[in-house]
Image (tube, rainbow, N blue to C red):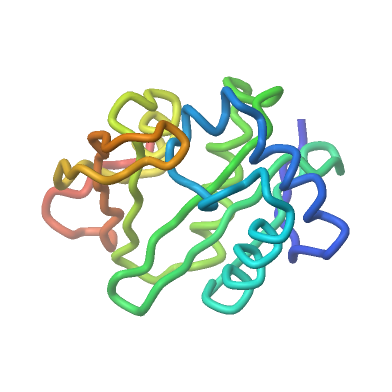
Length: 166
């Protein structure tokens, strides 16, 4: 399967909306748009993402839109995030997409967050060289409660404590 990234197009947004309203995916991700089911709120969320992201990409698998990946935030505190169609989970798509994104954005450090029980996402981040730095608690709208999240960092090569991608 060929994984590629490209700039987000308006025509991708309905696909993103479908992916981000999948109940199982939304529960697993835990964090996302405040109300992904409201099309107007979703559109506002994506407008904000387009304005504040350093890099915002559509993930393609064999030419089909299967997700999104981005780097956002201010320099020195930038975070990565991604969302992959549940039909593609466990097939290496998220890892390949994140590696492509990291190659496009050489800035370090970069941070990531994942629900502590989201083993798949934590594996993807570890394979891409992120390491856990802290645990925190935050309100997860998709679960309607506060949950534990893992805070991770990807440091510059040669930084003490850096893990090699697997």
